[in-house]
Length: 300
Image (cartoon, rainbow, N blue to C red; front, side, top):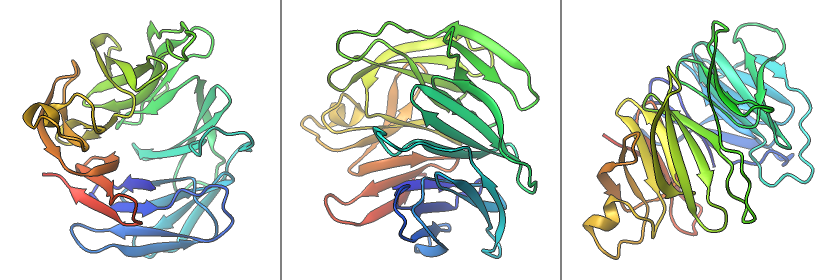
């Protein structure tokens, strides 16, 4: 599933099918109301994003904007060519709306290219940064890992660049030992370093303003971290160490909780098969086992 949340908490959902030529449906959930059809789209979808005015739908060819008020198409931008051959997953294109812009990330091989789109303008997507991994902050800052020196770098919307420490680049025989920028949440940049075989990973957090290291702790490779108005939230997969298992020994489902930059989790909420976590309003997307049902939960 693809999921995106607008600043007012409206949630948009669609099936992820970037190479499927069949038409797609984008659903919308306003408040606690039932899911409704937001848009019928002419092909498979690669990514979604939303701001106060528009819904953005990305394919491997273009980004299309639809007015959230009228539902009419209000813009379209052609993307650079995306080669989907031999892709290890479908996440070659991702998208974020922040600070009055739309940020499109295109992954090709080991290179991530970050493009910016200005809504209301017909100008083509502009290349802002390239690196080995990247994430977008809520204020539109691009955090990326340099291709040559692997420095953690922050590029503000004004064009100011701040350089931080070099990320780990020591590949081991099990496929680990390399850090990658994952997400910006709770005022920190979260960088993961998979241990290799298995589910373990090492998290390192950096201050989003100074890029100084804040914390480092062990975690799980499948953890989902989201930036919300209540701070950073984490969803941890079954059979992992988390507050839910601490409270109920033998607990074997997903656990959602607060998490601080040092990895301390608190206020656990369990019982759902989590697919995604969204912000700014805390939202959990969950699936019902092997059925086709997708549930949206708002977390107070």
